[in-house]
Image (tube, rainbow, N blue to C red; front, side):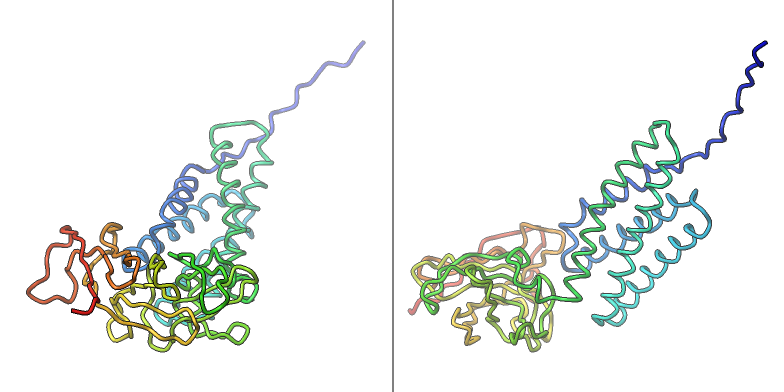
Length: 324
């Protein structure tokens, strides 16, 4: 007689955490990245989205073993403390520490998330949310790794033309018409020496061999914004506007820099534009073909006394440097 079949009791299922909150914070972090550039609003968006990511990451890891839970929480707190420390004392070491701990946090949350999903063979809505989170976290982990490498060994990455912000291309008449790209120091390495070149806020990269040249003196220099080399009948010059940083050289100015590496500049005018959170308020100076006239946008609402206007009243202004 065959033995009676005894059904096995079902395995207890651990309830998956609500991964949709982590997914929403990941989407917010990615969508807001282009706006986390400069100014108070940019930093506020960065810290708010990163804080949401840290909190939802800790919540997503709450069903893992206790030691992994505590590790995730410790990394989140350490990241927040390093960020706060870097705000109070803007030292490169604190920035690097924050980036390293943030990378470790990403790796820890990704690992915990994948282990949790593998322990739940049934596909639920939350499983799909978790899989999407794991996919995005892997990408962000590699991005964080790139940022850490950029801090630890900048010579390997600083000549990457993609790291020059708001750049423009030109032929350099002082270097046998070599193709060059001129842009802002997007890596924020101003003042550091890379291969014997002191990095400034306006950098030039020769495309043939990625040789870098500083076009301005980084000492007490405001941060550069947009660069234009459209003065095609006046080769050898790049037109640059700068952020408003009171007390620093070129603050809120429109200037031209020479491409011969002499750090010679021509100073034209101030922009007087408030552009935080307003893309159309950014000046985007555009020189004429001969470089003697420069068109730029401004709402004329910064450091202009009684003549200041509304921040929403954006107009075109012309700098005319032609001889009378």
